[in-house]
Image 1 (cartoon, rainbow, N blue to C red):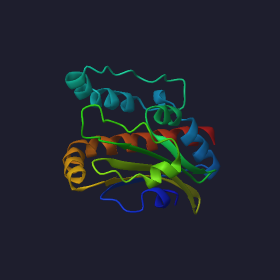
Image 2 (image 1 turned 45 degrees about the vertical axis):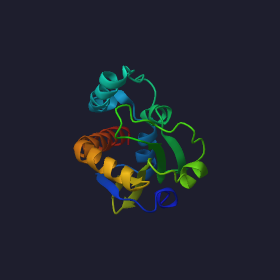
Image 3 (image 1 turned 90 degrees about the horizontal axis):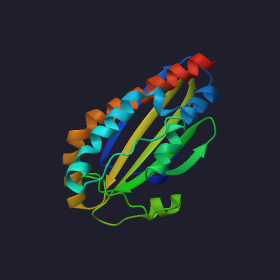
Image 4 (image 1 turned 135 degrees about the vertical axis):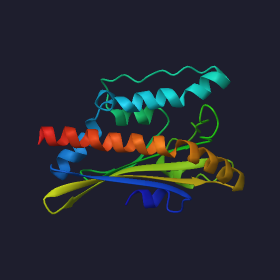
Length: 188
């Protein structure tokens, strides 16, 4: 799994899967072509997440255009595409101080190797993967998120933040999986 190359050791993790009645290639294509309009709850939860940034730092939420694929929008918002194995997996990553109101993303990381090698204390690295595998007559789509907090202070701060946002994070991932399932099965 690509994520093992970038976040092999982690303190926080979330995994969700769904079975889909479609080919692996159709499911993977649906992962890459899913649009925000296909998952309205994501926009709502991202707007909700932006409230602290507005209250504490005056930063306004700028919703993404719904006509562009969600993966492209995620990449533009601060995630880096770490790697892709066509029809099998897509890995993304970001580095930030997510517990701060605006998330304080590290925008200096431009390559997968820089992401993998980053070890600066006080930050957290988050890896996120979409993994497609064929099982009997269906395709299993799994999304996994791994977070490694770099340093004791970052681990404590992220741990508190994780307690607050974990249910919303899971809701987003499950909603994305259901939307991909609808899209892949409708197009198969």
